[in-house]
Image (cartoon, rainbow, N blue to C red):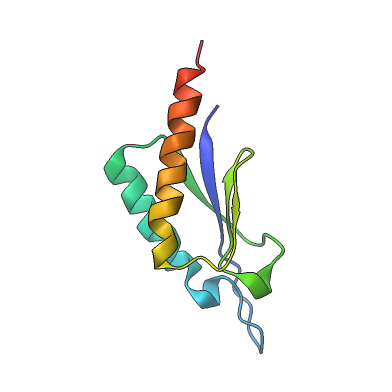
Length: 95
């Protein structure tokens, strides 16, 4: 089983900014770089709506991971840490 980090990159114009309007594309790139630097087997996938634009940027670890709202640069380290922990758990349970 492979882990993914799903990042909402919806771009919506008007009074209510979307995830992309709050920097989700830049956060996705930062996470992609750090995941690559650590050699984690995790894909960063851009998705066009996770249904909570007013609480963005939004991200979700899939399958079965945490849903993150209001993600900022300060959340990158905890997200990476959680991905590392989940990766280790999956590797321990491989046949």
